[in-house]
Image (cartoon, rainbow over all chains, first blue to last red; front, side, top):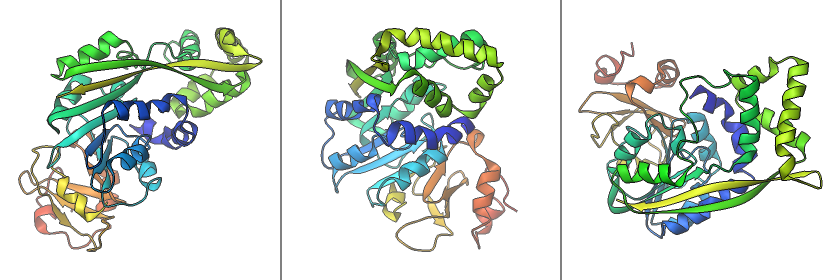
Length: 265
Length: 88
């Protein structure tokens, strides 16, 4: 959690504030869930609040939105970025254990489920927080996200211990089948998954490289900085080679696949 | 956090509610305070308007103690006998 607390301000500035491409899925997911006036919605792994503003508009003054996240630092950014309203709250809680005195009409979880150490346990707990016929919405990155894979595949080749060996693969729910099975096994029904591809341009390669390095968490940045100048240049060139297929007129345009799931208890 | 929203909170250990509120200033917006579960006797901090409702193994004792020390006159049931640790 220390990593997420540290990276939260940069994450917000880079992705959430400008509403970068993959976060266009918020509207899609909320439309799928038919979020309406008066709904009580729990936004799990809400982070710095990417879905909160849209949710508040949809539920109106008679509804309520509660954002839950493990990171207090991320929640604090979300809190500061939204008006202090009597129907908006934030809770520093864990998806596997969080409980409430009432049930919600819908639960949303955008780009969070793959961070949960035990996602099946988290879904079983969250199911208890949903009312009968309550709706669940999940968005995950798909397999085709070269913004990350161009970088990570090469970095892990140069730095084999870049990630801790016990770290769960972040792409374990990035295929329709694995995401579907996760939600079905937790007892949800009427599962539909939309496969959407957005386009994200990080600018030219230099801009992509510099922004990526700036964005990653401190322990990972230190590992890259520990490479010799020659190794770092070689790594940079390997990544550049990977991105060539996405470059048009010196500008990179990455596809960004997102899976958006809707289900009912 | 708006006082009204405290009504929907529950203890993450036993789902007991309502949680007792201690140490707040009585205004509509609760900024720094303690929530107390009368069933399992655990206390939880509200830090800058954000309730920290984590299970014991995920709690940051040092960070929470800094918040707790800002609050005066906590009852003995929390200060001396509250879980998951002694405040004294």
